[in-house]
Amino acid sequence: MGLNSTAGALLGLLRHGPVTPYRLAALANETIGNFWTVTQSQVYRELATMEAAGLVVGGERGPRGRRLYQITDAGRAAFAAWVGQDPEPEHLRIPLLLKLTFLDDLGPEGARAVLRRHRDLHAEKLAGYQARERELVAAGVPEARWLTLRFGLAYERAALAWFAELPPELRP
Amino acid sequence: MGLNSTAGALLGLLRHGPVTPYRLAALANETIGNFWTVTQSQVYRELATMEAAGLVVGGERGPRGRRLYQITDAGRAAFAAWVGQDPEPEHLRIPLLLKLTFLDDLGPEGARAVLRRHRDLHAEKLAGYQARERELVAAGVPEARWLTLRFGLAYERAALAWFAELPPELRP
DNA sequence: TGGAGCATGTAATGAGTTACATGATTGG
DNA sequence: CCAATCATGTAACTCATTACATGCTCCA
Image 1 (cartoon, helix red, strand yellow):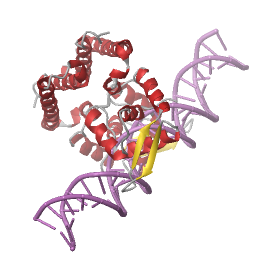
Image 2 (cartoon, protein in one colour; image 1 turned 180 degrees about the vertical axis):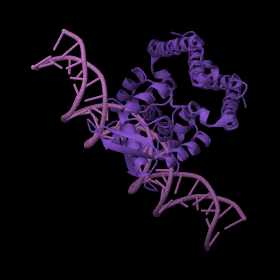
Image 3 (cartoon, rainbow over the protein chains, first blue to last red; image 1 turned 180 degrees about the horizontal axis):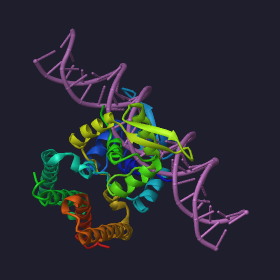
Image 4 (cartoon, each protein chain N blue to C red; image 1 turned 30 degrees about the vertical axis):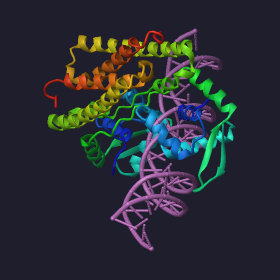
């Protein structure tokens, strides 16, 4: 019963108690949103298929048709199996690089413009991560808890360094 | 007529002459495969919809039902528009980080094992990029031509550095 | 007290992957 | 000349995003 990554993550988030789909989606975005996108619809779908597979159970419909979902023992087992497995290979999909490939068609000014926009986005992202980092440091949270954040930091720093080292005629 | 990135890239590859879908898919993987996955089926589909939109035309069926596709003027225009636009935001999806989030469930040995596997994959990828880099340097290809490769190098180096700086109890 | 905005769910569409079928080539 | 392999295309399926509908809440 090979869980897909999204399903695995949802189970992970369900371990600590029952949640409604809507809230689960929000939670997912807060916790793993920086490196894994999950939309509401996906949550509904995955919960439905997982319920069919007996990995979660949904309670009665409440106020707005709302249901609380809860992980089952089978769900915990599936989660454990998923988390223990090798992570599936990561395929980067980086739209910037894609366009860059065709950069000759863009002319230097066009290229610079596109690059500048992107660099700014990366800078923003980095700033966000750094803010979060400061919070965690201040709160004395142990390093082991922000490994993912550190990855994000490393990634954004590498990206910015790459922008900084562009050949002069392209550098924004 | 907002092209999606895959379609845009395919048009880009078609600019220099007609190609058959199969070959186009292969070509895409060679050129942009490191940061953009394209499967054969996608190529067929995108070509079909682009043909319907008048961006490409397919010739007569040859030997094995094979058709040569060719970019049209409208196609060139659409390509130019696409390439000039801001790149769509990149959403990273990094399975490793996803699992890492739930690392507490894994125990230190399990965690180390998963991490080691992944580090090795990154090391391989880096080695591949470096080999390619040496080729390009040897061939005297100007830097502006390997911007994407440099991004890949930067990314893999950052990833490896991150592995190296894991807290001792997790370091593989 | 009514309407602005948030919470919640469903439907429709688009994108990506896997599995499969079959026609050509070619080295043994 | 035939079996292994490559080339080529199609179909089925899974996953992801967008658009939409409607029910609550709460404060101007």
